Length: 148
Image (tube, rainbow, N blue to C red; front, top):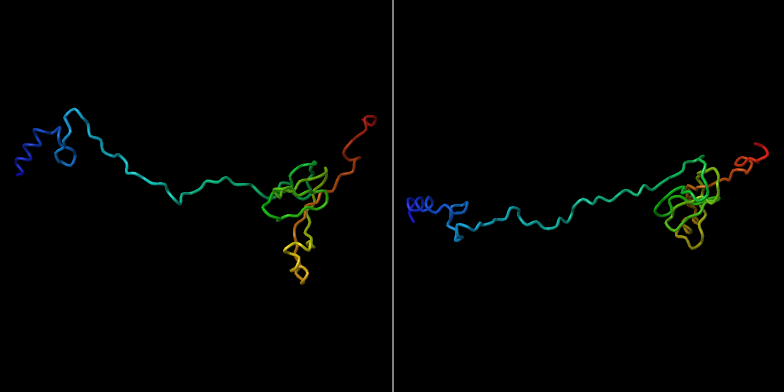
């Protein structure tokens, strides 16, 4: 086709031409849709927005705690249980009694089935933090009704 014929054709049949100028076979009443966005696959290395766990000390040295309160949360054994403190299944340390928290650094003496047993027996000194709860005396917590 010559250029003049194409120009004349495009003026007369503007409903049949698409954006690029080529002839479409659609009728004048039908609309031709084109993709508005390209097809995107799943992103493999996208940022994961995991929430923080807030592990660590919950009660400081010298603070008063009630029985059952959480002293520290951890993964693994970063802190060890001492006096009146229990280690739960999720390795969280809980107070067994009301009292004052005391955190000490002590040399550990592991059981024979522990992986730390052989290095300690060969002379390695390992210090870990221990959480202890020292109970308050009863006279400091309660008053008799006759004394009020």
